Amino acid sequence: MYSPIEPHDQGMLNVGDGHQVYWEVSGDPAGKPAVVVHGGPGAAGSANWRRHHDPEAYRIVVFHQRGCGRSTPDAGSPESDLSANTTPHLIADMELLREHLRIERWQLLGASWGSALSLAYAQRHRRRVSELILYSVTAGRRKEIEWITRDVGRIFPQEWERFRDAVPAQDRDRNLAAAYARLLADPRTCEEAARAWCAWEDAHVSLDPKHRPSPLFDDPAFRMTFARLVTHYWANGCFLPDEGDLVEGARLLEGVPGVLVHGRFDVSGPLGTAWELHRNWPGSELVVVGEGHGGPEMAGQVVAATDRFR
Image (cartoon, rainbow, N blue to C red; front, side):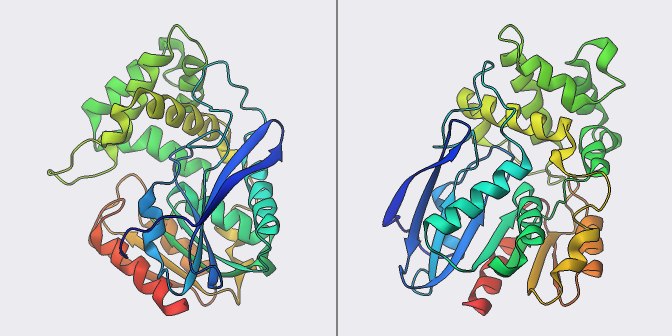
């Protein structure tokens, strides 16, 4: 990855519904536009997100999706209304930001949930996308949500039982994300629910015996915001249509260059989604690395892709 840099421009964009979205720009003001689409939902974007692009070649845009990071209002409060925080809202926010920055076309770099949001944006606004670079690929499909909240428990049975048993007994055979979303909306149960949800996130993200829990989850504010937004999106199928999903829709991207980078040992997001997407997307390239849901080899492949398109 490139050396750390600081933004030379930043601000808050009024996107409506009472929301202000934080954005920043670094790199060459006259460079090729690229926008970074962070994961989560709700993980926001750290300074490292600026380091995947050559700052002498790219105009690097980073933004925080509704309700997280520096965007306001914070979704972490149990009283926060999340009704205007959906995938269509986030796509519209990206378009408003593109117009605000007077960018004609930009490259999309998306990771994990950010890869699904990038796909949704590109299939809606194909003419505004120069390339897509996606890693730790997900597509927000209901079967992927079912896998990550229930089926992967076959690999982590002890951890999954703790995760399941943190919700009321009558909810344990139903939509677990929805059950957690209800607990997180109640001031009496939200703290315990956020800890249980994030403990499960850390359990299934890696098979590496050297894996250590994310220090981000030590922060109660981050933990709450992240858990509320993830469960809100997953409980509602990521606000994507049941039919005509993003993997099938990849056929609409013919002619748009795409690089997919995925870990062979990614147990929380198995390689199958990236493979299906690659097969449906004419001209796309799939790079498989020997890692899980992220890692240094994956980062190197992402930088190699941005270098190729600069």
